[in-house]
Image 1 (tube, one colour):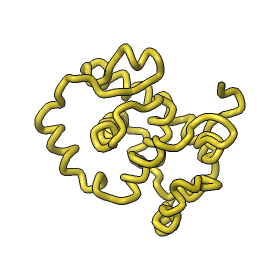
Image 2 (spheres, rainbow, N blue to C red; image 1 turned 60 degrees about the vertical axis):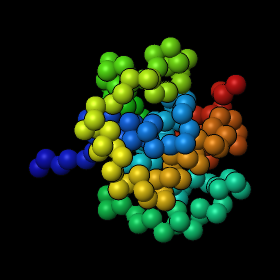
Image 3 (cartoon, one colour; image 1 turned 90 degrees about the vertical axis):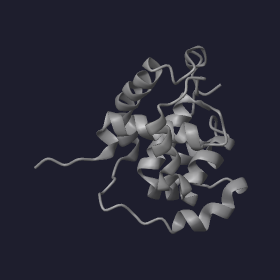
Length: 168
């Protein structure tokens, strides 16, 4: 039996990354943070596992708790993020090949849109995407990047999805 999931679709990953980049009030992201945001875009119900939720975003706790749980079982979320990495890497390489990402900044681990315009049809689809209007999506794209990412009290540690012990 063949089962499709957007997590393993490179084209869907390209779309998600572009959706985040074009929808956020932030213009630059650490690559690992963008990967984590993409993960939460795929599995928004897992936002419930960020613990403790920083005080600056406690007002979103009620919204996060109302997100419905997924049908599929997610026993090892850290493993899922690990398995997503090659797909996300391929997606960002495809975006860079189209000159939609600033290559100089990416060499320093920062993802930022370049001045190259998106094709009109794609730009229209990104603009009209109903997901971008959801409050949980705005939380992921606008609030998560404003939080501390590295270290003992950072998003890496709070999410439990990434190693933080060796952050500088």
